[in-house]
Length: 386
Figure 1 (spheres, one colour):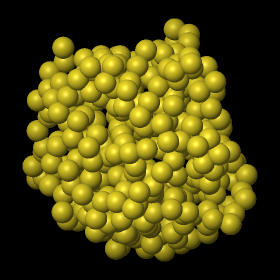
Figure 2 (cartoon, helix red, strand yellow):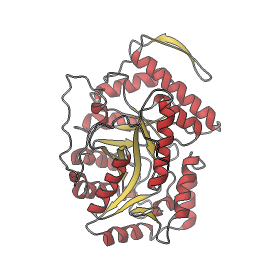
Figure 3 (cartoon, helix red, strand yellow):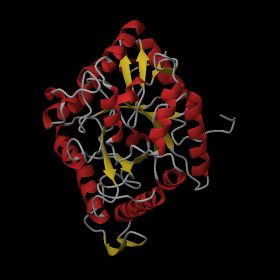
Figure 4 (cartoon, helix red, strand yellow):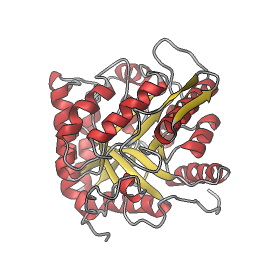
């Protein structure tokens, strides 16, 4: 990591957006490699976790997307939206899955239902049955985003690209949020993906790596965004195991892996559409660099990646250790965190008990001025930094 500055959009804002995860893609269990019936993806289990996160004071929640397992993301988010009280939703949009003008209308509708508590996770992986190149997938995402922005901010969609050729009015599809519509969260590591985020997206999501490697990613993105005269915020998607003592947390990590068959772990990792992506390979690198117990640096444990594609590491420790690690990330410039744990409902409550009260939190759409002035703002979190 060199000494070049990292330009952060929310540099002036104290605290962070602290979010949880809704396991709608069969990602819930108490032993990795197993899927007991009570944890299988269902409306009952996933909505219970989401609403508990809302009650606990989390600021946002990621609703992921996967074709092979689980529920439809947009249907789930639309159904649960009226049941929430204060938390934002972050549904994943797999670009190309829905015709962009219709997607713009769907997003605007849900944004009105939530009174602006909507953010979007942009996904660029292949659709089921596709085999597009990385450059083509990101080009399609770029076109989808540009069409969405025209639909939300202009009187007409007038677009011609490699994937879409459109000219039609935008009367029915203005979102509730002002200044450009919902914020766009994006994760990607290849050059076309980094360029797309730098030009169009608001929060660059990273998977857990060592602090030095995260810093390098942030510097690269910061420089790319500066080329478009923009700044982005940075986010970290990471699992967490917090207990009263470090020994208890480490013991739970070992218990979590205690029934994993390595062949089953490989099957789980390779079934995802993004299993061969550059980002997934970087997670494998972290496991290869880890010590015999799976720790690649203090309190960062890579064992989860043995049975999970994508985000493959967890913060493991006592409350003070977890809070200190989060503050280190915040000092680096990370402003958004998406946590999860196994099983998700129990870990949601443990994190809310031990960690969340010690963090000052905010809602990203509010601090970015996306919510109309007549909408009452939710209060900042009351936790104080030690």
